Amino acid sequence: MHIPYNRIDGGVGAPLGFLTSAVGCGIKDPANDRLDLALIQSELPCASAGTFTTNRVKAAPVRVSHAHLRKGDLRAIIANSGNANACTGVQGILDATAMCEAVAKPLGLKRSEVGVCSTGVIGLPMPMMRIEPHYHRLLTGLKAGPGSGVARAIMTSDTRVKEVAIFLELGSHTVRIGGCVKGAGMISPSMATMLCFITTDANLSTDSLRKAVLECVEDSFNRITIDGDMSTNDTVLVLANGASGIPQIRRNGPRCRQFREALRWVMLELAKAVVRDGERVTRFVTVQVKGARTHLDSKRVAEAVCKSALVKSSWNGGDPNWGRIIHAVGYSHARIREELVDIFIGGKPACLGGLQAATPMDELRAVVAEPEFEIVINLNQGSADYTMYASDLSPEYIDFNRSEYAYWKQARKDGLV
Image 1 (cartoon, one colour):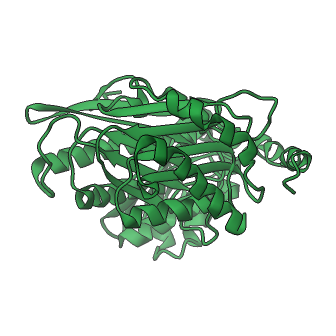
Image 2 (tube, rainbow, N blue to C red):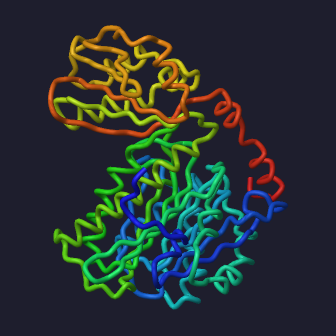
Image 3 (spheres, rainbow, N blue to C red):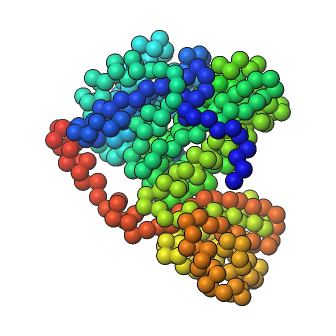
């Protein structure tokens, strides 16, 4: 597969002028020394941008980071896994603010220049007594170079590190973009359930960066789904510090468009990685809707198909059941005509004009037996299209998510509940 950009190592640590650090605090399990607290710092002032969950139940770090971005730009991000700090009331806000304060002062920053993110179990107070003793180690560990520690520290049910870094030439300057993401369950469009941090040494104004981030999130993280659930902690934060030495990229100019396309590619790569690492996922499915009357109609159809538990169960079983697909098309609230709908599985016609196509079922089964395949739904009513990336739904997913009791048991031992 052709990759349009030059990939490099380092994730969020790849761009110039960024330092990273990660330590283990035992936030979820004091007996486990895995990395669970991370810090990203820019050595230079930054333009910054962010998008957050559209869930009306928002975690304390989401509220704090959103408020900080409204005040100005960020220069650092502190993040933890093991506890979401969600539905924790006033104390949760105080804890999230304290995390920002703890790194802001030693770094010579204002508290509002620090973003804070958390991921983990909802409803449990933050075990600050296990985090606070490790701030000094986190701060003294800041260094230039690979940021894979950050990617590992924000993992929860993820099975692997998910990070990307590239460089591209903008005029006579080399610009780098690096990012990492966590997410494997509770993934749904409209800010998918994950944490994502992206750094770049490009030089953009805050307005230009925020516009680019909104557009790129819409074309990437808002186009994936695993289980249709939306979390309380979804966050994408992007920092741009200009350390590449490139003059400020003019909004809507050719270099701005080049940068935006590169940022979109990085975000989409990270978004796809989330789906591929979904909880007990066995299939990665690209669903493309074509021929819709409007953009909204195409989006409604794609989301209905990708979220359908019946459709996703069929994918898990290797069953090319186009009937389940067209039934989801029908209840999507998009304007469709049954007799015009065509469905192709792996390029082979499964349904033409709303009726069974002549393709032998064994050929279709061979397609959906593969770990990755594409479904194209042509509504044949217009020119609008929309693409989403989804997974199957497995029995193992249910087993994996049946209980979080162990976390509550530890919280009782800690005297937090």
